[in-house]
Image 1 (spheres, rainbow, N blue to C red):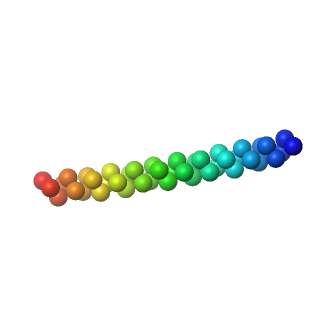
Image 2: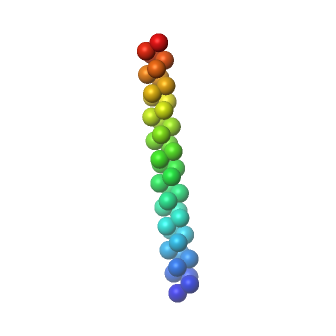
Image 3: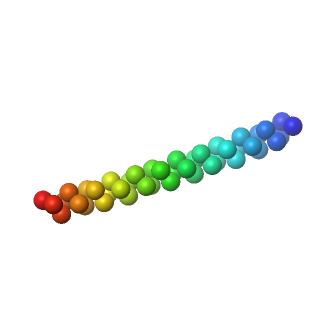
Length: 42
């Protein structure tokens, strides 16, 4: 029973870590595109 809970929580934490990394990468890409757009505008 305890092992199932630990495995479940580990998978849950791993999933949230992946989602967090994906969000950070997406924001970084959007910021770099926006920065490039500002440079082109000047």
